[in-house]
Length: 220
Image (cartoon, rainbow, N blue to C red):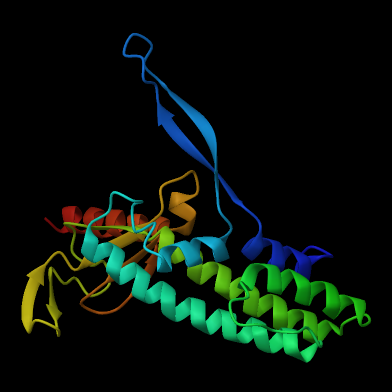
């Protein structure tokens, strides 16, 4: 953990987000890919833009129903986060006005909070944990994981079907994995058996499926 992890948590919400994306070459005569750095508004600004309907899942070209779902969720989170930041600001005697945006207010709170004296370790952990939670929630809204179901039987319960309580019907392919594209896909991705609710790391699930298949082939 950084020595300035409280400031790091503030920066994660209020500074522009830079990420690397893989781009295909536009020149068919010179195929290949390159890595480009893309800069997006800060997470709190993205949340504000989502409320105004300027962005949605998958960007401005997303379906209307997807944008509406995102914007409703964004509004709830924006109100919740803004209310708590205003409470923090009032606690350090910062005047709060209607229409104040949470990003600038959060940075003003950080300056006043740290200027009042060395915060206790417990206080720093509380505030940084809260802000890191907000950052994770907002990031998940705009970068939802991809999902894919697998044709294999569950290596734990051996199910090949699963029951969906919402529809009251059975479906094939109980195994599903969720992941984000990138070099750490296998490390961060997760698997789930929808029949027995067992969760896996992707590497763990792949090994379990391979082991189960090898055991079955020996029996046959």
